[in-house]
Length: 188
Length: 164
Image (tube, rainbow over all chains, first blue to last red; front, top):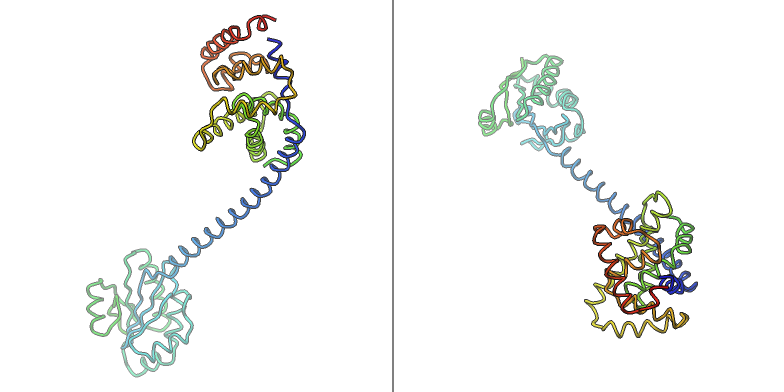
């Protein structure tokens, strides 16, 4: 058995092999380290794109429509964070004016305040035209929250609170030239 | 990932061990370089905290054996070279070995793979059967059986040399 031990003792790694291995391993380590860093950066970028994409989609998707029926109506698209993400109107002039107000991305209460302070709306009110609000939202919590905001705005402007209407009604009103989720509220 | 110094120390410490395992499994000097790089690169990239030197040594044995077997699998898939030819190609690299020991080595290398490993680990590294079973992840009784059979084969081939 000692012969087996002595025989294996004869087998030794040469210095050349050790040096070659060391230099190869070190260079591969450096390469892997760089690749690892690159892959981490790529992963971070993908995560960032995903976060921005999903976040953007979440933010920009309207979950609720607030209609300010001023004949023609102004419709505000509101996201889940109660911020205005879109403004539209059948009347080009009103649409231009509301876009000029820069209410996009503002809280819907502030947006409604600014719209109601807008001279053209004040003129409409002065001339005895009705201004009513409509809320179309599937989420009860958000609808109640926004309804409270609208009530506050109406109080400030001495207006009556509109009452909720279901979607069927709102679409009927929309067909009549009125916005989605029409409440039937009227200015005093 | 380990530092260059750690890798350098490991190469210095375990190069001979890895080389012997390569020789046992591959019988080919040319592939030894590949296995060397694979084993020490695995060591460099691993983050295992070794409990002690024997744990580290066992890790190297295990990794070197697995790497050799993986290479053999690829080797047989890509090329069809007979063992005899490989042995012939390996001989020049062992020129420095005495004739007497060369004969012993050749007898050991001609044993079936499962016997070669246990013979090396038991007679050279001094591991007991339960320790070998742990390293090779095999049943202790299998190791005892393999050792007995390997001894018998060696006795048949080496004759009197085994009794020394």
